[in-house]
Image (cartoon, rainbow, N blue to C red):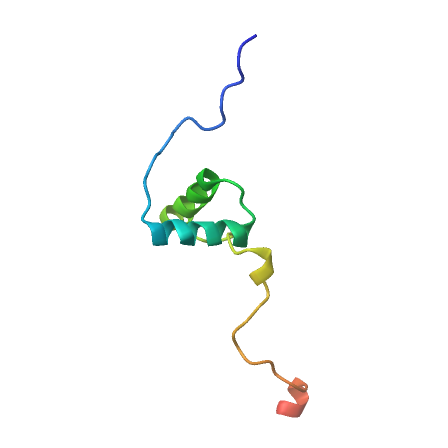
Length: 76
């Protein structure tokens, strides 16, 4: 029986400095990614193709702006 062809055929290997590897592990935790390979693929996509749509759900709808109390009418 023939083996199923892998979805990805472009393999990249690299060695990372210790601080970079530790940052990769934190990135994996933040995004819930299990493998180094998948995390590096996502990082490469973001760096080379853009970050639109890559914000984790935990950070969506969070603003660094202070909350506004009251109504627009009260502010006028």
